[in-house]
Image 1 (cartoon, rainbow, N blue to C red):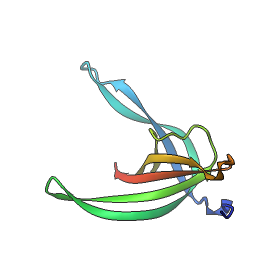
Image 2: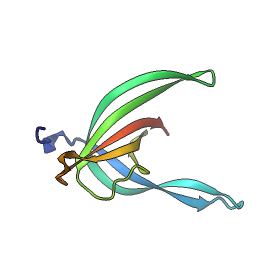
Image 3: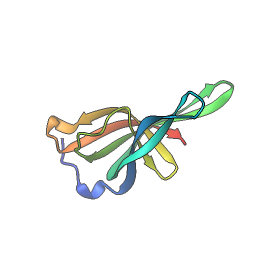
Length: 109
């Protein structure tokens, strides 16, 4: 596999983690908090439209590559402006602890 060019990391994204917070009525809500601001490479992989509950919904998948860090987990997400990339899997590229590749699905805010 070829080496990742650090110049390809041209997208600034927020890495976010979810925490449950009391809603004041005995329940809880999910609140996303920023963990880090990162430079990443975003590569679209596929897209398709689905018919769900009588409405069309699009599903886009992306590969997001970043410098290696231990704190990126599938329960997290990346946010770039009003775009959200839900992490589905995290791979250590070539198992060398230099680059991470996150397989993500783009969701609406």
